[in-house]
Image 1 (cartoon, helix red, strand yellow):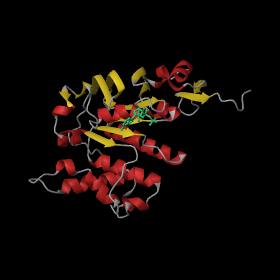
Image 2: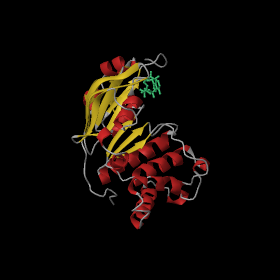
Image 3: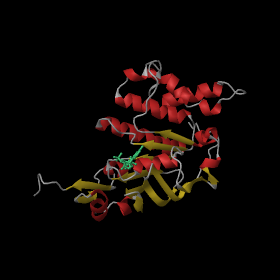
Length: 271
Ligand code: ATP
C-alpha cells in the first residue's frame, strides 16, 4: 500500500554545513550523508544542536556556509513546492489554527500538489484517506485537533506529513509528551512506514534505547558537531555516552531486540 508516486529515493546530504542564529554559530562545518530508505536518529545532549541541524536539513534555516543536497541539487535552488514534494517535516510542538479538524489538517499535506491549474483531485482525496487509515485515525477525521489527546494529535500531524507523499520525513522528537505506550505506537508506525513504504526517516530522539531499537543509523551530536555516526552497536558505547551526555552508564544488549541498551548509573540503587 504505497503512497509514494514515483518510488524514488533521494540522497540527502549536508556538506560543510554551518548554521546559527543572530551572532551565534550552532552547527559547525558538518558533513552528513543520510542513508536513503533507512531510519536515522539524531541524538545528543540538550542544546547540542539536534533541532537546529534538523531545521537546516528541512530548509527551515538558511546555512551560513555549506549546502544541503538532494541528490546533486542544492535544496535552496528548488522551489518551496518542489521541496515540499520531497521532504515532509514535523517540527517540535506544531500549532494549527483553532477549530481545524483532523481531516482538514491532513488535507493540508496536499497543498504542494495544488495550483491554479490543478485543484483538489480524486487522487488528493485518496491520499488523505490513506494517510488517515495508515495512521489509524480515520475515526477521528471530523474531530477538532484541540480536542484530541497528545498521542492522537501527534498521529494527525504524522498523517499530514504522510499525505504530502514525500520520500523523506524529518521529525523533531515525534514521541515528545507521549506516554510510553504511545511512544512505542508512534515509533512502530514510523518503522512500518519505513519498512512497508521505503520512506527515509530522520528523527531527533531523546531516548537512546528507543533510538537504538528503531534507527538503522545514529548521529551523535556534540556542541554542533558530529561526535559519532553509524549503526547503533558501533556508536553506543559507555565512553560515547560519557563524552556526549556526561552520563555514566552501562551498555548491555536489549533483551527484546539485542540492540544496545544504555543503563544509567545514578547514585541510587548501586550494588
Ligand atoms: P534539546 O535537546 O534541548 O531540544 P537541541 O540539541 O535540539 O536541544 P537546539 O534546539 O538545536 O538543540 O539548540 C542549540 C542551541 O541553539 C541552544 O543553545 C539554543 O539555545 C540555541 N537556539 C535554538 N533556537 C534558537 C533561536 N531561535 N534563536 C537563538 N538561539 C537558538
